[in-house]
Image (cartoon, one colour):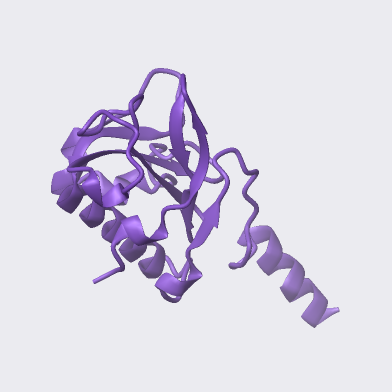
Length: 161
């Protein structure tokens, strides 16, 4: 079982009008998870509280660092969409992410654990220790991984040459 997602939350900003935003969690090469709760998010209570453990429901956003998360055979959503918590997720028009509203703490935790499982199966991370806390608008670059097919061809060419 993974750490409680609330242990990893770091406040990115707080504003009287826009509420509070937590930094995102980059889980491997592809998936970014955003847990949000404030007066302006789909959470319970619908307040901006200092204690993340005081919330009973959360707004959770899943996106990919490189492409739309719902692209068939490319997006991680193909793997994740069959989980019970995924029924609460929808893809807003013109968005590249999926958003789940009013997820219970258990559902949010299960979502987080399933994203970790996906990243480990795909060999994007070796353990939960590889998860990075990132700024909400940070331009995410691959920090490790295979380098894609182009990287493999270059490596073969260098060995042969």
